[in-house]
Image (tube, rainbow, N blue to C red; front, top):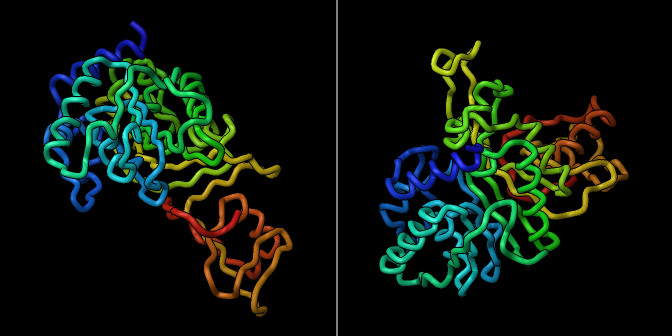
Length: 322
């Protein structure tokens, strides 16, 4: 049995018998006025963070959600995109699709604004998305891509890139590893299916996003997710997994490399009213300006004595320069 077959079997089981807290960060789902989330849908919250970022959504956005789970985030996306077929939710597991349809029917009885037609459930998988090229505004996935082997992850990212419109957004939440995960854990198919052994390091994860063509990546959250105990998992030391929420934009990669925003700011501390690097970056004295990591590094080399670069906050939601 391949790791993908193991994952399909595992999620068929937890679709029929929900396993509360399976892999989600222990926090309440996004709370929105007038949004009521059915209990079973909450129990099937098999994500590690959130992919629903309201600032990225418009009333006419079309969202492709990969790996529907219990339908929770499909419902949240529909809250912002209220028209038939606004959310296309894809899943290869029959039992999971059936559970999501049932949960969304319950949601329609508990939410006067929601029509089950807002969400269309389709059979399909991350490697063969059942939509046309450049046809959706947002592709989202929560705690799915991390179970893939690295080359399969690249295949899934390429497929997401294919279906996005120019300027479209790939909104993801996945575990990442603070240290490379040893081979004996990577090869444990059930641990991989449980989102415990397939995670890449931050640098590896971001580089694969860039390699398929995304020109801008913004980190929305980075927080502790799970600890792999050294004794239980036969490790030399405890290994911390983190949850990373990101938004990647289908924009051309600049000649000097992709723009990765992690919450850094640049502050000009010199005696002039402002500093202009003649490359599109103007810093007013004493005022923090959001910059991507690439620009922060370049500015630090130009005026190291009159510049403060703040640490990554691992949260960024717009503004600044690259």
